[in-house]
Amino acid sequence: MTKPNRTTARRGWVLRKLALTRLRQKAWREQPEKMEAIRRQATEEAKAVRERNNEQLRIIVQGWPEKMSPSELRALVDEHLDYDGKYPSLTYRFTRCGLLRFDSDGLWHNLCHLPRRQDS
Image 1 (spheres, rainbow, N blue to C red):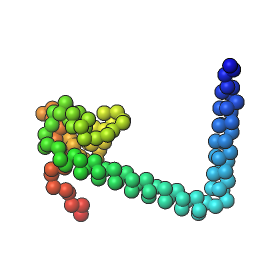
Image 2 (cartoon, rainbow, N blue to C red; image 1 turned 120 degrees about the horizontal axis):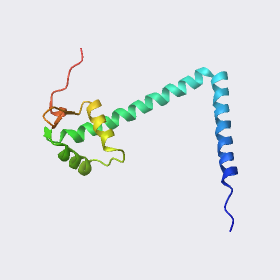
Image 3 (cartoon, rainbow, N blue to C red; image 1 turned 45 degrees about the horizontal axis):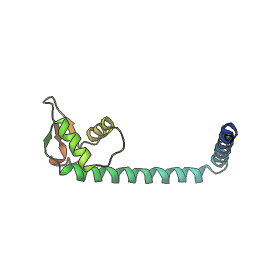
Image 4 (tube, helix red, strand yellow; image 1 turned 30 degrees about the vertical axis):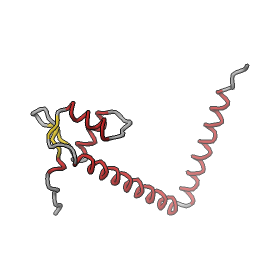
């Protein structure tokens, strides 16, 4: 039994990607308004998805205790969230979104229990 020639298969894939790139470049040259509208719509849709995901995460975190040790937080994450990424990435997301804060007392503080700030 012979092995398939992966070099030619890969070459075909690369050629298809280059053709698609050339097609997009041509569209940007010839129809910049249309391409900009498509880009703007895709950006708005991605923003809506990100905001929806963050709001779902906020709802879940609201049910957690006000203070947690790192091991308790990891147990809560394992129990309540179906997260495939790395744990440090998730904890960074918690802090970036203003959901949790790690203080000098060595505990995670749930910021969802605080009243929301009113932007002026």
